[in-house]
Image (cartoon, rainbow, N blue to C red; front, side):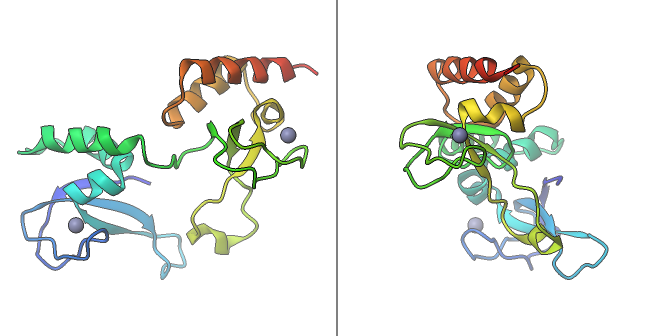
Length: 187
Ligand SMILES: [Zn+2]
Ligand SMILES: [Zn+2]
């Protein structure tokens, strides 16, 4: 999905974050989403004030701002808000890794519980049908050591994409993940 930043062409849209109107000519963020009313797979935009998006959708706004060529009078302020909020945001691109916040999830490979605090890898669940297209993606969670089977490719490449998609992983987390992924390799 390609998200966009633009100045509002009219004052008719409402911000999906705060519910207030977005004034004409104000900078707004458009989140491209599947259009539930389109049978041909069309998309539509959910609009947000740029500042609201910086808090609620920081990663998406950062991507859109990076390619926006227009003038942003408060770019510095927005970028600071993005940086502050991005770490709190749940990753939306798979695969990503995180410390398990609870012992509720079961590993998608070995079916054993993933212990609280354990490093786990989230991968995209296979969609069961077209109705899932408009549902938020629910990931499959895997033990780091079990993730290898779901993530083909060289360990370094897998690790690089996980690093790119994850938030707040430490060097130690990455080292542990790398070891888990390469241990399982070739078994
Ligand atoms: Zn707003
Ligand atoms: Zn497992």
